[in-house]
Length: 226
Image (cartoon, rainbow, N blue to C red; front, side):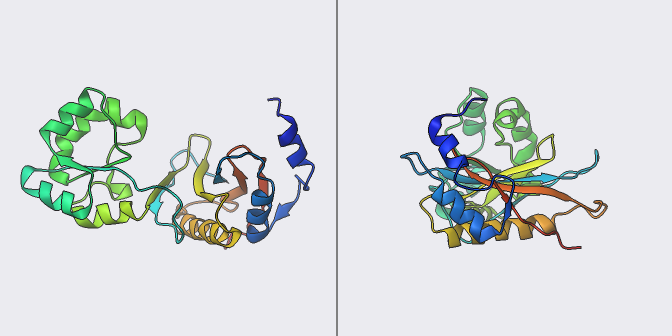
């Protein structure tokens, strides 16, 4: 891939082979910013996963940087008002299932009560492809509607390893202070360590890098705890 002059100029400003401490890497990504819009800062973590292993969960960052999410709750009629009072943008059963079947996805995240999953599960062709299918592992299939919606409104973010064993997750914006971004990075790496498969082998974390949307990547010096 051929990069433009500004990208190449950014590469010339630092040692692309060096691994930096988290705080230093966050400052560097901010300093390398060269476009006019407020870029997202993304962390990429390459993991050593066996065929039967996966990593998937959610977390709420200490410093928020995303806009308020539109939450859809699939629930029975007697819990619709509860969901709306908790902050859900939309709530209902059959009417929203029919809308989604028709291709409607004007929401950022979906929550479902357990008694709705038989019907919601049939929406896999629409929700699954967009990563919107409620899942117990991410706390989006739950009887605790208020708790789930509150967490999502606070910015709960899902993360999962892709087929190559790499987790990509936004951790901030270039406009944020490097200290806030660094705290978000540390919070995620701590959460990732807690989700390490019990049978994972040594060297679970292969590499960690940080970059802005358009900028080059900066390697992070991450020491995995035994």
